[in-house]
Image 1: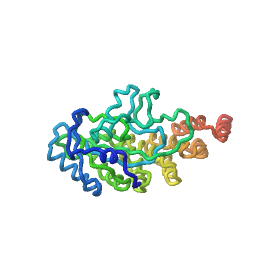
Image 2 (image 1 turned 90 degrees about the vertical axis):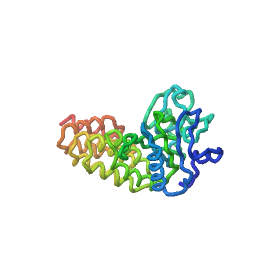
Image 3 (image 1 turned 120 degrees about the vertical axis):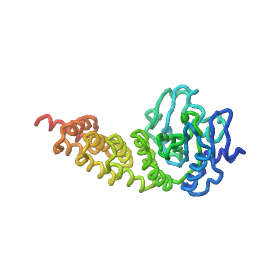
Image 4 (image 1 turned 60 degrees about the vertical axis):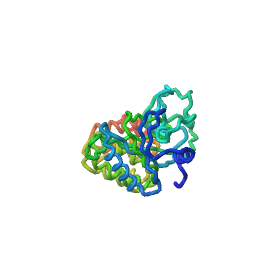
Length: 316
């Protein structure tokens, strides 16, 4: 997408230095001036800056990508108390307080949520618009370059950075972002950050590389929680190829929880609510826990074939 991001438009309207601490926002932010260079070079610049400044308490390095998202859906954290939603990530980066930080969330949206936030309130008409998403990586001060936290958020939401400095390297296209995520994943420490890597990679809907990355994690030796996350986010791609991978997991993965999670993902509407696969699992899967999960999912389905199959199983 070649559109100029909202952050870039805000920065064009302000005369800001490449390094500043906005007193009103009390958040140290360091920004690169040459945002047109490749992401890999800007990332190296960010690492060099962080090392030179020797942030004892740790620091963040972040950038943004543009992505089509449904209106009134968000990724990040939102609190019903509006005071907890300021400053937004956009305000932190730009150093400018904006009168309207959340384009689509109003005071009437009384919710507290984290992750994928859906405020459509039953509206099935879901037009998509381009939104800017920040991807932020945390490193401990004096650490060996391992990512110990990762946060993903719309720029219109608040991100808690614990006052650690943010090194902002601009925006990136999805291909170079997916490539960087793949390389950083190798040095991620802990199950939690690795799970969030799965979500971040899944956002790259224009990159075939992101699909291959998720499949590689699924077929690798990571802990079950990480592979479960990879199965879920792979399922959000809703292609015949990804569904084929999930079907293989249901039967071939060594971990029962991963099998069940793959089955659950196949049963979602995004994947066509694969009732035929659920019926096949009930009839043929060797693991009773997985068969039980398939029966439960059939009971949740609105497909008439699901009810017919359940009646058949009860009669046996």
